[in-house]
Amino acid sequence: MPPIATAPVTPVSHLDLERYTGTWHEIARLPMYFQRKCTGPVTATYTLRADGTVAVHNECVTADGGTISSDGVARRPEPFSQGKLQVRFAPKWLSWLPMVWADYWVIALDDDYRWAMVGQPGRKYLWILSRTPQLDEPTFSSLKKNAATMGYDLAPLVISGGIPE
Image (cartoon, rainbow, N blue to C red):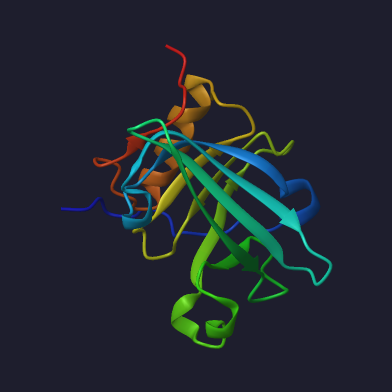
């Protein structure tokens, strides 16, 4: 049985897209179909585009040592709710369909943009990201506690990055 949320899933109130761009290392995630072959390091690289959207490039290492990647775009669905983003990995010609856009909410963010936690309001997806391949254990524990408080079931959490002992 999933945990009971004692706090709502709430996006951060301010997200500076220019500061958010760059490469992020995945530290942990809730399992998802599109990452089923990822067994090694995972990165997400965001690039601000002239139209205000963000180019998304995800890459991971597979069991055979190869890499797989996917490219998409992120947008702000509401200008007044800065921490709410939507991402699309489907071809542009399908972008008019609402179902090709997935919620991607930044729900925790370091003041210096050193780490972030991204979730989906239905609590199905969650990513803990860091600017470096490792995240210190106290920060990781705090983010997990925060996610559990919001009702995310962390039992299946996949640790994909480094957590020093």
